[in-house]
Image 1 (cartoon, rainbow, N blue to C red):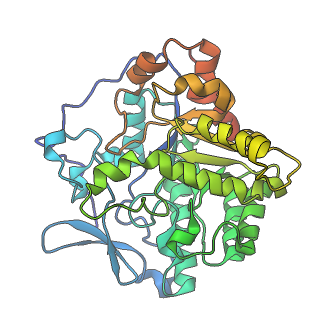
Image 2: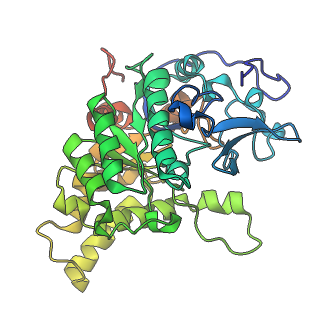
Length: 397
């Protein structure tokens, strides 16, 4: 299926001019929208006709079809540049999205408009945020092959044309930890520096983090310096009361989701067993992190609920975990308790709460009063160090 790049201008604002650049920005939470045709020729011949594909519905929508199921966008995933009054929940067709959602050349142009040096991109439609869809395919071999094909497409078509601008994040096969570990090592050998895993795997049908099931995958990440990137909502949203406004309430509770997932990953003890492990929390903000650190100290020093580790839980959090934020204007003052070197920036392009095309302006307005060395750290240097990604020759401010 070919995709038109001619946009319906009644849906979009006028094309923005590139914004003045005052800060070197690396966004550690953006998304790509998988384009039609991305799996063509990427599976063995006997499996190719079962590869995911985009189909037209009788209503004129374009949706993904795979393994007997259909998949659409989730929660305002591709609305950058859209006039708010034209958005109900989702764009139904690719020509109702900016080409930067799914075309790498257009994405780089949109990054330039926004003043973003580099970007890490999570999956969107057909995979789920952590590759879950392929891992639950009825045929295990098909699940493995589609996982590999997604990673191959990302490497060939999304990362390789602009290696200084894209941080390569992969997915892995979750239904067989040994196979999942092999895929992590295969990707690491060609330059991937991160993998998306589910925040709370027991919520999507896999063993919990506290099960030895995950050891091969965790060990592979530690051994290859592959950052575990945990995107909020990768294991579903919070339980909602009947009749509640799902989109508004679910988005409101992103911080609570990240807090719960982070606490579980902490107390799973994987970072105790693998001190070199790196875990990055995505899209949950930082407002809850200082509170969690205080609570961890409290339960050790006052309640005695610790597990007898050689390292204090709060110190483990500050050693092995990183956090990211769109802005957090009220809670950025907790940055020293969290650790300035643990905080990273995100634009969340092309989602509904993303800051494109005015991320530079947002940083200036909410963080512009901060010391320049702290700004450089949170805007780009922490991310460059964590994901082993190059910075431009001149870093601003």
